[in-house]
Length: 288
Image (cartoon, rainbow, N blue to C red; front, top):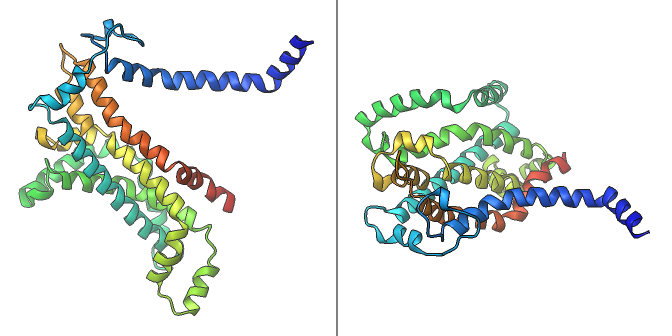
């Protein structure tokens, strides 16, 4: 009888718990592996395991005690670039989305189609053109050329505004236009309608896109490698790859410690904005 009940329970619900447990294990194993080995006393990956025999903090100390490795400078650079680029991406994308969703102007349909077409091409196709463009810009305006954070931020802006604008517009389309009409009766301008009505109601998707954009820029390596050549201007991803890795002596302990420190703020960001992210991903479909 007990076996029969267990069989029925497993057929109805148990297999779901089993599948969930498998996926949780697969997801947590590499995270635990990196965390434990950031404290492990080993020389290479051949000596590493999930539960090390001995623990040490020397890998974390190497990030703070070596003047040739400005790790926390890289971390600050990453926060600065990702924060500014993420904020401006969402701000400009929200402006563009409001224009396409609420305003009537010539070329509106063509502009929307252009946004979609531009997003169809892989960003890798533009790397050579971007490099040559900012190389020439640097001769005229060195502050925004190659090797500058401002130039890198400008490239990040150009790569995400179209995608963000399209998603925010789709969310704004679910907001009733009767709110705009009522505000216009009271004498509100288009800008007042934007920042007092439409933008606040679009906060869920705005928060989601900011978090996604921030994380994407935070972990980017390729564009940062193209732009930044000075070690003091490196981002975390670029600094770890260049300083801690070479063809013969990869410092896996320091890489693990640096990865743990760099990944912790992202985990905190997800936890802090968990409700907003969930709401932003589902609210549009519910309203629509």
